[in-house]
Image (cartoon, rainbow, N blue to C red; front, top):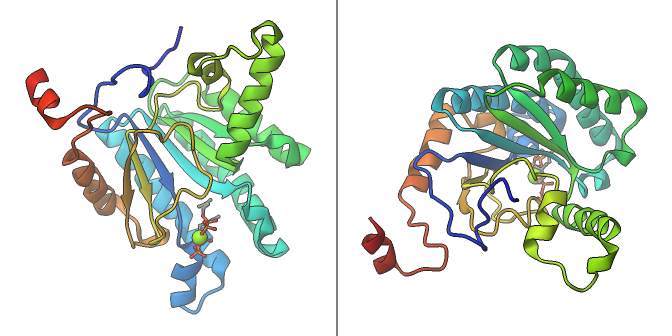
Length: 251
Ligand code: IPE
Ligand code: IPE
Ligand code: MG
């Protein structure tokens, strides 16, 4: 039994306040460059934006916030930037998780962990275990995450579990194996930094998500910028394949 409504197999309810917001936090490097600072200063400042967005989501009663912190393609960056980002992630886990726990936030990390060292994997497990029973916001950080990787690992796990069903699988069979099996599909997707692409983020789950792109660079993204995104979302008509008239008829 699926825990959440699938946008393709059912017509989900469209909540006024997004239940699930997914964010590509982009533009840190350009923010720093504009200030003649090293790129990593932008990443550091980006953590503050993230704190503010988590706080706003808690205040608004958003149930799920999922952020893209490091993609499976970000390993292609210069080695010193990659190692800075990994260190920043470890520091964030060390410093922030107890505060998040106090706020009843459940922390989840999605992505391929096989490339992380033992120390990082230990911090990830500790963060998830400490906050596992929290019932407030579920805050997911995608690290070494790729949408294609996710679909492939899910397919492989599904095939292994049910070899007898080979050639006869449905969407519902795959969904329990996807990394975000504990969350509804995002209602709102936000990408900062001006690019209008998905960059291999949640490919399966964004099927019917409302997309919002802003030129604001991530370190400059604050609660007012989040409100603007939510206001844009609230003006959208989420038809899920139906006509506008059908929606009017429904109310
Ligand atoms: C996003 O900012 C952070 C990560 C990808 C880790 P960028 O580092 O991509 O910043 P820009 O796009 O170069 O400005
Ligand atoms: C996407 O940003 C990934 C994260 C924010 C973690 P990128 O800056 O890596 O995306 P591209 O390369 O411009 O598509
Ligand atoms: Mg970028």
